Length: 134
Image 1 (cartoon, rainbow, N blue to C red):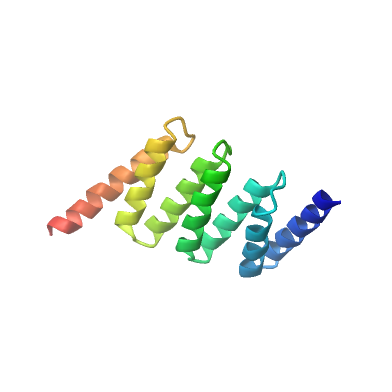
Image 2 (cartoon, rainbow, N blue to C red):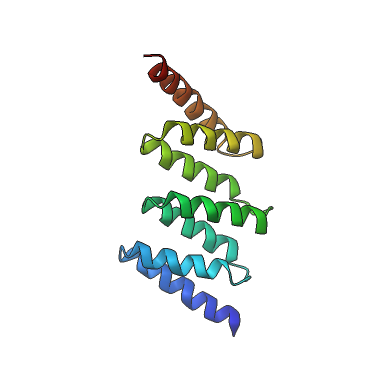
């Protein structure tokens, strides 16, 4: 019964995403992450992606740390770092984006995102350092 209740709430959150009610969906996913169900890490990942879309980087970062601590072997931990770094890059938060890419590179050297993270970090370093010199 407990797992079916989690699935019902998960489906509701997915429906809210399709309805563009991202804040409400993010709250549901975040709450589901705490249920200790088989979907907990996935729900946390969904919440992180929504918090980033909503510009709530602090909440996204805190949840990434929680997921990484609670589910160290979760297959998409590297994706969470990449999402956060990419969002910071789009926001022109160069130093934070660079540091997040560097964290991904050092923590997940076998990541699918490794080459893209290296390339993005290199570009940021060049642009950021160029701006610092001028």
